[in-house]
Image (cartoon, rainbow, N blue to C red):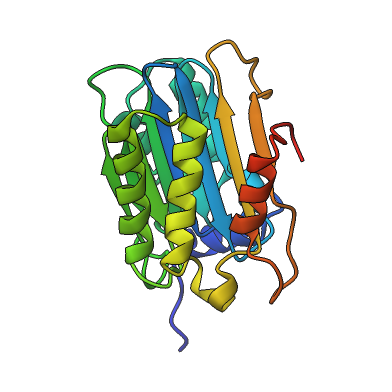
Length: 243
């Protein structure tokens, strides 16, 4: 008699193939308590780097990736607006009663409230070379990575630039993304490391859904341009509107 799979497995597969999901590989969420900005950056060997973030101006930011559950992202945004902590938000959106597919999800949350640390979550079903790391005001998470150095390199870059105190949040996020790319990024893309990349930063006064900085590399053909390099070119040109 064949082995029966648990209901949660089927629910998880529905999330994977649902049009409301987005696959992504490595990302950064962070806040700047001095400017009040919240932001994130991501790169992946799928087309969906742009669809995984939920910035809430003046509050914080959430990212949902791997077999990304957009319902969890939207719920996380509402909890951010209510002032919940990153740890409480992670607990709520990974509760089996809310999301039975939580083992194949990955999340990161950072908030502006002083004294509250960021948090990350990596489900046991997100595959080989997956994890998350946190530092002051930043969480970096990734799956299907070339190595865990992608996470470490990104965190070192962000923390170094933060300590120097001369860079905007957007610059720190992009530099960290570039560091992760140099470390190998998404292993599915080989030397290209990513086919899409995205950067978003919201100021405290930005309306919901209208962040001041929003850059998308577009989807680069496999074997062609590194999407992170395309994102850098857009940033250096000052192309800060939605692309």
